[in-house]
Image (cartoon, rainbow, N blue to C red; front, side):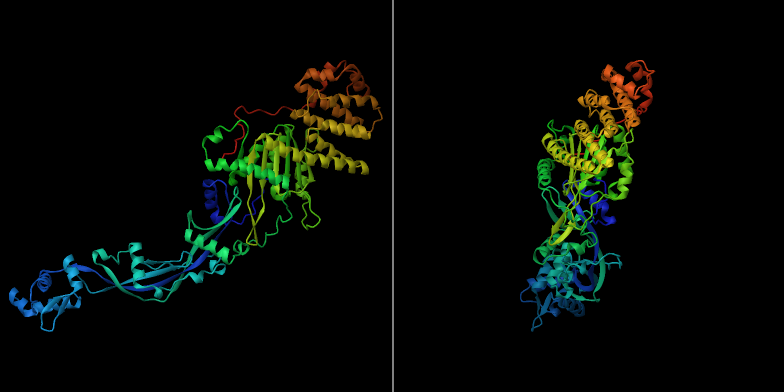
Length: 633
């Protein structure tokens, strides 16, 4: 079924991110997700920063005089004009000389430098450079170098090292290889405020102050399969953020050198699981037809599509994390028949909810036929149903104690398919995807289809296989006189609504001991209304009573079965039940002991003897809601 645990290798810590991505991006399935760590390179550096300050009155006068007075004045001349001791002018001039804003010519006159002219126009002068510690962080995955005011904290991060799988070392740029201009540009981009030429603050130099150290950073690698376009992409993510540059590098790396997804996602232990599955051309064509119907729906994402589905039917993609719930709810919509095919039935595919759901269907008269793929001669895989499956499913029986679920081998296919009442078709493919020589579990894509043409095609395909299997088992049963195989074959025919075929086979072979089995099968068909109370098969079976004598070996079972059949018919339509018990039939009923000779008539038989054979009707909850339809995405 569609209920088994997914083999997709997804780290538990990433599960919520995966679910959110799939919910917001219909058609995408994360088939693998793993967290890694990788080493950042942290290097302590020292910046030399100059910052301007407003010049004082004396500095302004000296700079202005040096710019505007011709010929240029000397320090002594400026002191005389200002009426100051020359020592004050010399001290200020020395500061301006140190700041490269002023030059003293050979004749002692003062000359404004180009830098000094710029600062004069801004009304400020530069201060002596100041040292500022900073930390350069080289990220080889993103291939960027950023700066931090404080060092990164050490963290062990107990995760696999991405550097063991990908050539990250190639992407590390040593800090001492950066030019001053590159450092300045990065500082501007980060807005740290150390380099701001428009305000006069500049980084004039940098140097390595501490040896490089490693600091670990985490990152998630997603393998995402587009279920509709059948394409795989790899993405680096941090939280919900897509790391675009790292993702592009990974794509380039894969195309040029190739990378091992088997190693990245630790797939060695499961890479062979399901390898015996092969694509069935007919099934694949049907799935492709479904996908082509779903694609426009996903692209349009119309909100009204779910509330107002087209009258001709629809094809809906189930959200992966809702598959189990939606499949179980859809199964409960069955009224008479469920056909199931799974490539391989395993213990993982059954749980308490499924057992309860199947049991409730059987109580309503629903037949359930389950098929699994056969194994090719070349394969070493063994798809035989586990004893646990047989035990649990065989315990689900009809009211007459007949196994209501038949499990047989059918033609091999890679897809899972369910047809409910010939009206609803559930299908999925849980394949392995070949990518760069590696094999990845593709994930499960489930569609619910009500398009009549597709549903009819799927039903015809599965029912034909079950019919062929029933014929094969019947021939084996005849050859070996195996009543168990015969019962399985008759039950398959009953599940297909072909009680007439089952009865005809019994009559043709003269194997009348199987009539009680056929009657039990008829009871289940009558409950589900898959078999009509006025079916010609019932009259045909009644005609066999004339050939039976009191020494018939299965007489007791036959009597019980006929009582049950008439009781089931009478519970829904007493008139038909009375009509079946015509005078010749009634004589055989009393002759063989089906009805007591003390019972005067069929009416009395139905009124007094049969009600106690019927189980109590199930309680009906008036507040019960119909199963929810899966959301359209």
